[in-house]
Amino acid sequence: MPKPLVTAIESEKSAQAAHVSSLLRDMIMLAKPRITRMVVITAAGGLFLAKRMPETPALTPVTIVSTLLGLTFIVSGANALNMYIERDVDRHMERTKNRPLPAGRMAPRFALWFGVVLSALAVPILAVGANPLTALLAVIANLMYVLAYTPLKQHSAWALHVGAVPGALPPLLGWTAATGRIDAAGVVLFGVMFLWQIPHFVAISLFRKAEYARAGIVVLPNSVGELASRHTIIRWIFACVAASLLLVPLGVAHHGYLIAASILGAVFFTWGCYGLREGTGVKWARSLFGISMVYLVLLFAALLIDF
Ligand code: HEM
Ligand SMILES: CC(C)=CCC/C(C)=C/CC/C(C)=C/COP(=O)(O)OP(=O)(O)O
Image 1 (cartoon, rainbow, N blue to C red):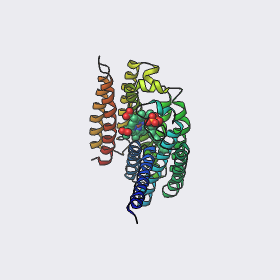
Image 2 (cartoon, rainbow, N blue to C red; image 1 turned 30 degrees about the vertical axis):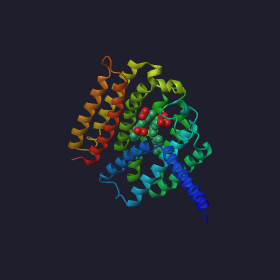
Image 3 (cartoon, rainbow, N blue to C red; image 1 turned 180 degrees about the vertical axis):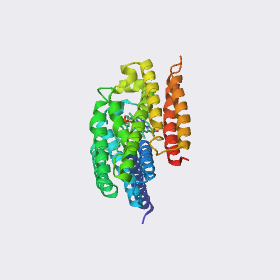
Image 4 (cartoon, protein in one colour; image 1 turned 45 degrees about the horizontal axis):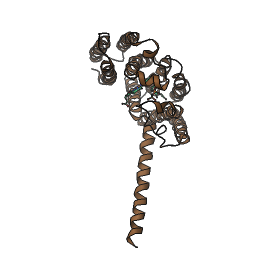
């Protein structure tokens, strides 16, 4: 075979390989992998915590794998559908403009089908591998995120409270996957997650308020102002920390958790209050966002380790 033909075939093959790997990267990007991973960690928290209850049936590997896989699929599907709906809005924000759809690397129909297929696949996995209640709640979370939260973002800062419902459901889904029931402790886990999301996102919207304004997304700092937003952060951190302690009287967590949750809560709350000082601007808001992540990871770790 003459050399130029071999070279042409090889370069064609390497172009195809590059195309496949870039498509795979974009499919992963559609799923918002870091948020999805964190959501699945909170679901795993609910699952393993419920296992501690004496009346919980033994957790089988099938239940564990189906719950975590089904949730990964349904959350990834929800994220892809959110990106499909927001493909034009995402073009206006620095943080989102390089996503596959606004950057023009992927056809919108592909993202739509990717989201629909992943979400649909999750339903039998959750219904059979865990139970129908878990599948039903997961579908509600998916629909609320895609059809209620996502369009509402353009119209009202209350979208945050709507989006916080699907965001808070995963630990309860972990709980129902293990127990087949909605119990008080599962509801408290839902409550902690719900309350945590308000300071998490108000902090983000403080350091990205100009971007959100440009994209036409209504966020608290642009509707009620900076100071009121900082007060909001403090109130919701307080409620979140108080709710986290309720797991102790409910008997699912013990002294080790109580100490850890109190210390973590005190740090989170103190840092929230620090935002009321003169001159704490974007840098503080960014640090509070970082602290919100560390708080959540360590709170769930303390819950699972407990002693
Ligand atoms: C209404 C609820 C929520 C809203 C509006 C929201 C919004 C956001 C936004 C806009 C970012 C990007 C921050 C930036 O870099 O500028 C972000 C990051 C993040 N969020 Fe949330 N979030 C919510 C709920 C959640 C939930 C429930 C979880 C998980 C349990 C979560 C986990 C994360 C993680 C891990 C990151 C960092 C991701 C990264 O570095 O790409 N969020 N969130
Ligand atoms: C079980 C199930 C299906 C749960 C759905 C859970 C889910 C995807 C939670 C994330 C919560 C959330 C509102 C994220 C931000 O979206 P955004 O649109 O504000 O973020 P963006 O601006 O980065 O697109």
